Length: 119
Image 1 (tube, one colour):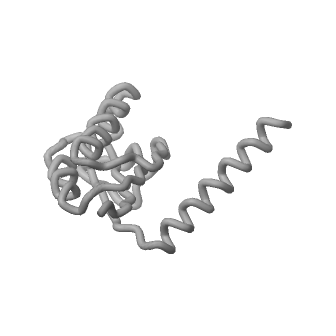
Image 2 (cartoon, rainbow, N blue to C red):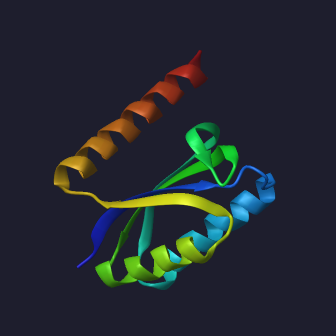
């Protein structure tokens, strides 16, 4: 049985764009290697933090939604803790209401980008 999860992690702001993509690919690879599948991902870019973390006031935010067996979550979170590029992370198990909300939000976002492209 695959559960659906949503994880957001904040990477250190000193990374280049290629290093950030490499970090994202590493974590996506861990999910897929352990029997999971990526549902959606979104990079939020460089944002100001609410409070300094390791003397840094900004960080690269990245959101990933994925389906995976519960046992694989421990491996993913262990890698988040070990990677020095990651300042913080949060993984949540999504219930049916959260999944429905996320799908509606993605549909709205896709519809709004299509309208912008037509103009």
